Length: 323
Image (cartoon, rainbow, N blue to C red; front, side):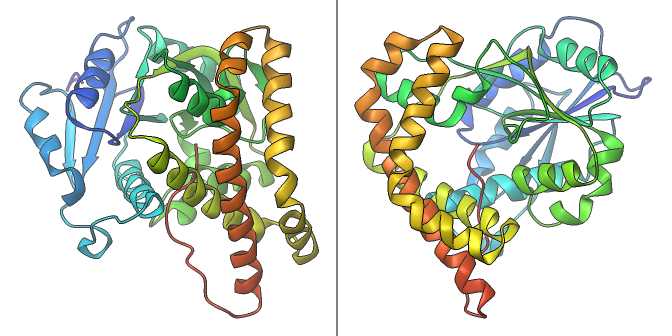
């Protein structure tokens, strides 16, 4: 960042993998096309304290030491792990200075024209929330299965006004709308809750593939992936359940057993409509369906917990949001 000039774009980088994965992400941000002044913030805590070792390699990046967060816990499941991501994001969002504020994650490497594209999109459109495209960068079946489950809705070609979801791995806000709902991310940032609130206020959402990131994820095995799907879906079910009427929440819970089949057909139809990666989808089909079953089980539990919360019973409402 050039000290003599205010940044036009703040980039909050969520540490997920850390280490050289984060270094690769920061390298990509350091070599963006155009002469834009970027503010890059990397928040870290006790769960990823080794991130500070990269500070000397990237002196223009602001490494934000959050100290000990979430009561000093060590995450024991993917839901608790995601709570760290959400806490890091909200801390850095409060420090961002630019008129445009974006969020990425370290394993999603931005293309060389990413910043320029995101700035141009915000100059072109009045929408307060703009998300970019996400590609898969690891040609292995499990990576494709995860990609289809998490990011297929964000693959090119992509130009959608008022989408239901915008991924928190490649998203950019105009400052004023984001700050208008700052009470929602005072403690943790969860993109669905924030974006749905902005939509209710009349703020436009948009997806466009001009700004691309590429996922480079090292996978830990099917057991870890299954737990990840379950816990992320559990939180999603709780969040969505709070948005629904009690009757609709119960209806979604009852229909949860057929959800894997509905989602699988939806994903297949999307690949056919886009005319890309169809062969990879067929090859990874059994793995994708397995992950969708895990997701559906978690979503069911989330709806049940949302219903219990409405009757005065307790249910955990902390954690993260699936991308």
